[in-house]
Image (tube, rainbow, N blue to C red):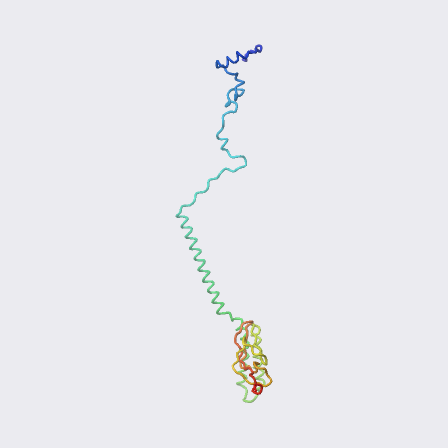
Length: 223
């Protein structure tokens, strides 16, 4: 039951001061920090320690990392991977070596296939020459040899082989080798006048130089 309220009484300032000194203190509604129902703790309510630790909305709870396997298991796994890698490397070495050997052994396979018809033509020409009586049918024999020579040169040219030309041209030491000097009237000194053996190039690489004779200064010119 609520207390009956009487008329409001004004307390003189001297009496209020004496009441404070006597320990009565200020009314509860004037105490700082006091709520309408009592002390400050009642106003704010008890603190919930579990609420502060709860994750915010939308955040995933922290997950503990998985435990690492023992060192013995890690060592066995590393050893297994090493053995597999070593085996793969050995297989790669054997495969590479075989490819290199095949390339070395069969690099000229296509060229030899192209030369086989020329060999057949030479065999036919020789067989025909043996069956021909002495002094007869020489023109046909020469014609067969010439056709064989042309087919052979076509195969070489198809493979990138070029003949070193140089007749009646200035001597070129890069692709020619002079083995003789011949006085030749009307030729400038150092001119190729005879070719004893033809030279050949494989694209831009010299296979063998041409053996030639070059003209020297004529005796009359030297006088």
